[in-house]
Length: 247
Image (cartoon, rainbow, N blue to C red):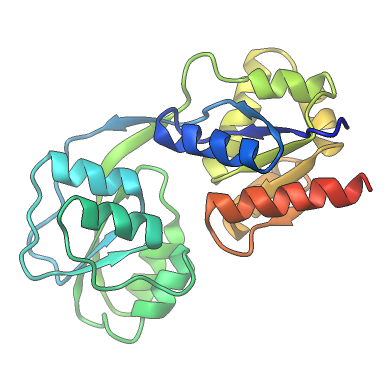
């Protein structure tokens, strides 16, 4: 490894990947932006008869604003601070943010108060079943509205080729889907086996336990599970691990 570690980042190709690149550069890394997620809006609107409405992403917050969803007394829940900030930016009040910024964390926060309540979950088509099942087990009547679909962008896979060539020091996976799309892109470019071998020699950081489980199940060993489910924590902890490994 050179003094400047090469780190792949898979955030969507908008301000999120730009912010991730800026953060990695600030931390002394050489970022490899390789967006693995693109958003296809469905133009659906959350139901208006719910007692609770749950949002799980900044993208969802922006899309419901675009389609004109209006708050009307529901208890609005955001899975984490980034989602909450996005909702507030769009003019919505946020009532609940769990201490643990995950589906299971939100279930734990709500489970003692949603028995018999109508809960609307507004999110992407790749949301974790943990949220729906956990709320249903708590006695809620749960409805899911798909606000957008997540697809793999054309041309993705530069990071897979770098991994295959042994030129990647680290990778920061921010969802199970980024893991799956990384491997799909590697296969599309004919380097899947070599990319798996190369990433085995790199430091792999993930943003939470579900992403870790997906990576491990696909043959990718995980070195870092971020202590907090934010990209900044993931990036900093992954880089710390890279540098310790090369001391």
